Image (cartoon, rainbow, N blue to C red):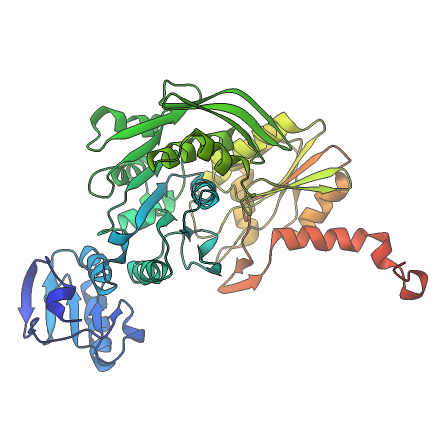
Amino acid sequence: MLLKELLKDTKIVQNNDVDIEKIEAKNLSRDSRKTGHGDAFFCLTDDYDKACQRCKQAFENGASVVVSDFSMPFERTLKVDDCRDVFARACANFYERACDRLKMIGITGTNGKTTTSHVIAQMLKRNGKKVGVVGTNGVYFSGRRFDCPLTTPDADFLHKTFLEMKNAGVEFVVMEVSAHAIDQKRINGINFDVGVLTNVTQDHLDYFKTFDVYEKTKLDFLTKKHCRFGVVCADDKSARKLLENADIPLVTYGLFSPADVFAVDVDCSLNGSHFVGNVCDELVEIKTNLIGQYNVYNCLASLAVCQHFGLDSMALARGLNFISPVEGRFNVINLTGKYIVIDFAHSPDSLKNVLKTARILSDGRVFVVFGCGGNRDKTKRPLMGEIAEKFADFVCLTDDNPRMENSLNIIGDIELGMRKAHMVEPDRKTAIKKMIDLAKPGDIVLIAGKGAEKYQEIGTEKRPYNDFETVYEIFQESNPIRNRKGRDYDGC
């Protein structure tokens, strides 16, 4: 693609010997180590010395042009005002602006992004729409599934995926939008038809430093810069701030505040949830296998989005009443009368929500096994310890993804918020087995923090690991039939 088409509408601050009318970009690169011959390299660092090193390496690898925020001491370089923004928009142009020919739905919020995106996608699919999903659990479309490098990938990955989806006949894309992606402008240039804000609670303060900055970043998504229409939770204090000066049309949902979409006669059990939804004055009876009050919120957001795209009450009920469980989100396993719950909860608010739900639904005791990620927000660790011992009968602290931190130091940070006796077992499989062994029929054992993840980050390695597989292995190891010798059990 010619640079003039790639950089359409870009303000070039300084041009060092670049003929944008003639130079072509064979591909786009943001990694100087992987830049190929004829590629346009976009230097995304805000450090001048690093930029010089990376631009030099990109040219050595055959880059046709370099775009950056700096005046570079090289020929064939362009200086722009904001290279991250320019890169995102260039990716959209390079991949034929496929996003403009798809109905784009973006979900942001501290909690609920994955569930809400999958619920919306399944509701649309149940009603004959062709849908693609991008988020924590991967990329899904047309019977394909592959891993996502991030909850919201970089712009080159995104727009390449959008083009593949469009060519495969996809009509709707439902994607999670992380605060990091908003701040790093990965989604710039995408005009979302609908944006959803589920909630804003503490998380990622290792990156954003203060809650106010994190909150502002989330709220910025629900503006005309990114979205044409918004769906926000009226019960969330941060989300309500949008109602005061929104520059796009908004629909609200909630359970306790006046809202356009709300639920009455809510009844939750370990088998699912039952309620009557009022969706902008249209009544819908819902019986879903999604469990807990916080999933009622996710359902309400999904109802609002799908009604916006024209689904009537019958279509809304058909879509939501036949939802398949979302992997890693309050998945219940009945293990000989003991209820094992696997959930991705890894922030204070999400841990509180799943524990409160477990407490309400349990006729017995509530056990929880969890840890906190290494090299991430340390301030949430004692808060999660305090929440765990408040809402659970037994707490076991273990490893999550310790990464480059010492495992016991992470656990020590969690313990700063705890006053009661608890168990410490860094090995996650051993910790889970100990809590399952302690539980009795009727008890709930919550395994929190990793959900559907297929790995554990220890040091610089990603080691194969999965909570579901661990529970299955523990069950097999304790299954007397499996442990018999072949001559004692012939399968009949």
